[in-house]
Image 1 (cartoon, rainbow, N blue to C red):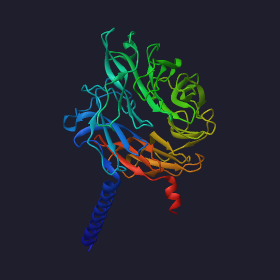
Image 2: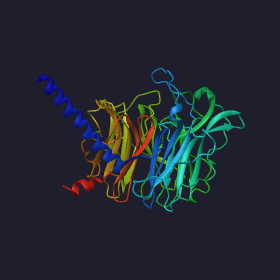
Image 3: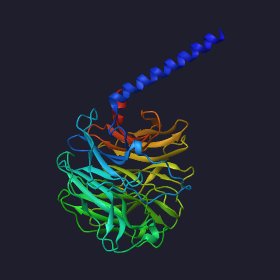
Image 4: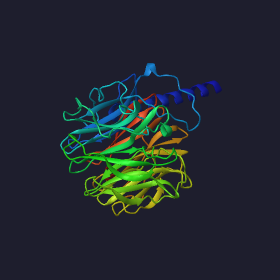
Length: 445
């Protein structure tokens, strides 16, 4: 009898697992699709939705999965400044049900210098032009040394082809291998790009040429296009004085009449999230608000961006900080266009680690936050929403993704308030799923 009970228990357990897998596969086939090619190493995706509703995704490609090299032993916190990847693009015109065959954006093999903490960016302008910005492996003719350049391409045929690259930074004349190491003389990287409501394209990156040492900050450089990406201005110094944390990626968001850039700024009492604002189309920037988080006194670079979303005069922000107790992912709100922030909330208190936020807000101010967190189930994606302009966040809910690690999400909001999320799945694959508008859940009650 004991044997029979044990057998029945095991049978029911296995049967339950099979049913769960079948249920997941049905959900995955309808709402969750891999967009990267099978058998290739795809990481660090980004996503943008155009005025026609089409979903556009880019990601870094590291070659064939079969050619993956064994991991290199590294000391805790040690990382390399070298990267050689390709950039791929895919598009869905039916709400994510099907995707175009991936297209390689760059021409030269391994042109793209990219990491999960220094992603290429994609945006779609009002006219439907697809804008792509990325850090590129390059060579300084003056120094005869390797550098990283800020580079741009555009597509006017829905991503079927991309223009010749535009290198945005000025020629590198100063060798800073003493700061960067590994043979790199300069990096114009950890940047961002955005398209304003009027179609102005702004790209920004960090310049390390005047850093005193590896504990110092960088400058933030901006270029602007007013002709839909056909040409760009010369470099504009947006933030000077070596005050920008040099390895925390910049972010951009737009209100009706201002461009907001998020960064980690070097204050006297810590490296903390700060906004700067331009009201003249990116030609100049002034200090805006510092997030209302306790100072994080850290001498090194934490590799943590400041994510933003804007709806009207309300600016939402999320970032990881080690200054709060406990350390973790925090969310806060500005109701005066980014001048001041208040109401900070820890996003995922139950998680051992919560990080890598992706943040959207629709035209009505409904917010969706997606992040990866490490719990008993390993590193997975979670989401939370706010329908009261950020005063409160719903409890974290795990996003349905395939088995294994799910990490580094990016998101974009559609006209109906639904949010499309892309992420890097275990074994280096890029997936996309759709999450409903927070209002859809309220109306269904």
